[in-house]
Length: 152
Image 1 (cartoon, rainbow, N blue to C red):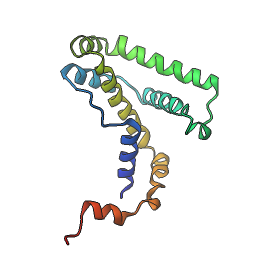
Image 2 (tube, rainbow, N blue to C red):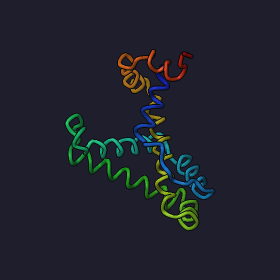
Image 3 (cartoon, helix red, strand yellow):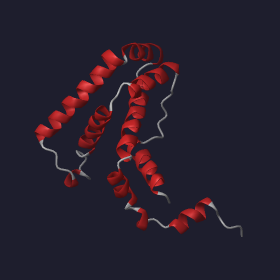
Image 4 (spheres, rainbow, N blue to C red):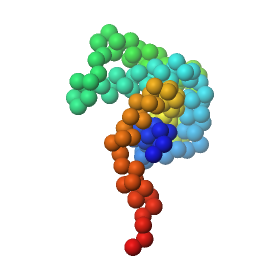
């Protein structure tokens, strides 16, 4: 399985892509604005926030070390980013999406923005190598057998 496939799988797993959220015209406009209005640094700040909060889970907290002051700085950066996006950069799109499509628009919009941020992170060669390191532990033959089963 190519390294890009492992990256795509990792992004899908991390973001739980199978959301049932409905994307309407106003949500689409908001998503486009959010993605267009974020810089590489913004996306990195968003990924750092996602990572820092995922690291709070008891099953993974032992492999991540984030101090209280680091967590506060990460939360501040993400809060400032989200506030800027919703009240300044994408104000009209946010207002219209909330007015005409309701609160679920937020889940969908930030899911897509998170996906864009993760995609940018995954484009780093070191991150790609890290995700690719799983390859020896997955049987290509078993995957091929599922995708291209032999006729009896």
